[in-house]
Picture 1 (tube, rainbow, N blue to C red):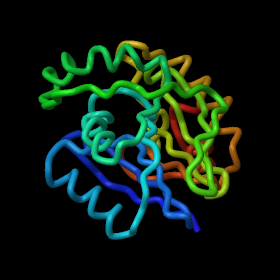
Picture 2: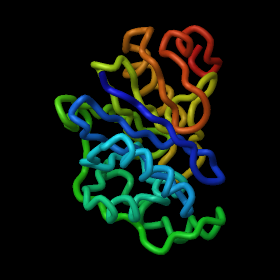
Picture 3: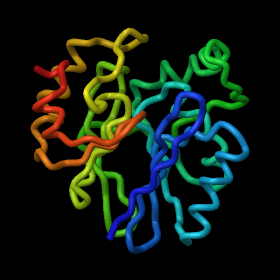
Picture 4: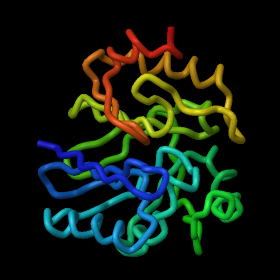
Length: 212
């Protein structure tokens, strides 16, 4: 049975996820570990559970979600995958880091780009990329059909949606994408957010004030 492990990292309380299946292969989603303690907690979990990370996949390229990517990428010698629309955020990452008080010596260089409908394999499983721009140009949501869950990044939160006032953001585009692509999923689909607690598609359909 696939397992999703959540870590809460850095001063922005980013949810970093490790998704693994019975083979031990794993995806690391949004490695946001910003210091030695956080990095060690990630690697200790992987080693203790005898996991083999095969890819880093990011929901988007904002600094709080990529701050640990280079170190994790180098430690496990695995590719870093993201939507091409996030290149702007990667290019501006060092400048943005200074504004938000992050220390980042190296910005991850994508090993490849993901697009709508791409299936990212790990072990006997895969997640499917859903492109939902509006928080950022290249925001991706990862749909794990077998586990009846999505990893939504900063697109959708419990009772809220992602901010759209940053470069590449657009509120109308974000809401349209959520309604057309995410709310069309089964209501009992669990939503694992980029920050904060989980929710479900049904709960957000029925109660989220931004989606009425």
